[in-house]
Image: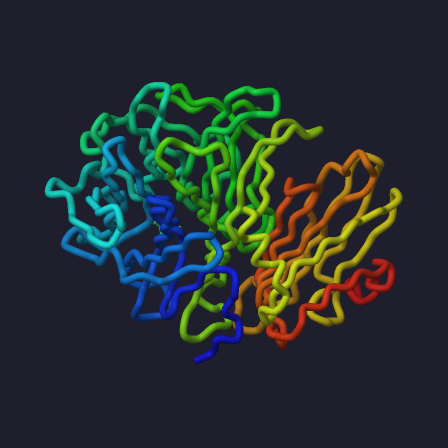
Length: 448
Ligand code: FRU
C-alpha cells in the first residue's frame, strides 16, 4: 500500500476512488463533506457517496458510505441543505444509461437525520425528471432569502438551469444561464454553485461557480465563476459575456462547492477536488486515488480589472500549516519585490528546474508562469503557461505556498490568484525546500 503521496492536511479517502466534493453542509457545528466515491476500485466506477466529518475543516474523520447505487442508478454529484425546521436533505443525480448506452440523469431527494448517519430515499424519486437532456446533473440547492424559496442549480448541457421550490419536493423550471457566457468546450458545464457575497462598497452580489471539463484556463478541468445578480428567477452577468474568471488557475482545482449553513454565512467556504480529468485515473497513489483541496473562504475584492473573488484559508487551516512537524507539509511566505522587467524563479523539492517564475512586465502588471515536468504514464501532466495579474500598488507581490506531500497551493496578491498543482517529488516526506533565484539562469534549461 503506497501512502507516499497521502496528504496530511487535506482529505483523502482511506481506500478507493474519489472525485467531486458533494453534499457539503455544516450541522450542529460539524462540517460534513461527502464525495464521489468508488470504494471498490481506484478508477471512476459505480459512484457512491463517501462521507467525512470535521470540526475544524482540516482533520477529517471518514464515516461509513452514505449513498449506494440503487434501481434509479449510481449516485452522481449533489448537495445538502437544512430546513427552518431542522430537517436535513440531500440532493444527488441518479445516473443510468438508456438501452442505446446514452447517459440518463435525474435529480433525487434523500431524507437524512441531523447526525447524517441515516439516509432514506424519498418515495417519489426522482423529484426532477429528465427533460430530454443528455447532461442533466449535479443539483446544488440553496435558500434564496429575498424570495423565500429554494433554488436548485443543475447542469443543462452548455448552461445552468435554475429551478424553484417551496417544499424541496416539487420543482419548477425558472430560467437557464450560460450558453453565450464565459468559456465553453465540447464538455458540459458541471457542478454549479451560487453564493451571495457583499462587495467592498456594500452592494449585494451573487457569484455563480461552474466547472468546465475540458476547457479550463489550463488544459483539462477548470472552475470558472461569474459575478452578477440573481432575482429569484434569473441570473444576470454583471460583466460582458466574453469575460472569463477563474476560481483557481492551476491544473488541479475542480468541481468546487461551498458548505451550506442554515441562516447563511458571510464567508462561504469552498473545497474542490484537487485533480484533473485528463490524468485523474493515472495519479501516483495505490490504495486510494483523489485528494480534496484545502478549504478556502471566499470574498469579493475591488481590483483594477473589476470586482473579483479572492480566497484565504480559514484560521484553522492556517494553524494546521503552522506546525512544520508534519512530514512533507509546509507554509512558505515570499515577497516578490521586483523592478519592471525582473523575474524571480521558485524552485521546490530541491529539484533542478523552476516550478514558478514570477515576473513584472510593467508598473501595473505581472505574471506567474507555472511549469510542471511531464511524468511517464500521466497524460498531459506536463505544462508551461502563465497567469496575468495586477501588480500590487505597494510594488511588492506577496506569495504564499501551502505544500502537503507534493500538493502545492499557491496564493498570490492576498488570495486574488490561486494556483493549485499536484507534484510527485522523489521524497514527498522530506522537509519541503522552497528556494528563489534569479530567473536568468533557467533560460537555457527551459528553452534548451
Ligand atoms: C464532475 C462530474 C460530475 C458528475 C460526477 C460523476 O467531475 O463529471 O458532473 O456528477 O463527476 O462522478
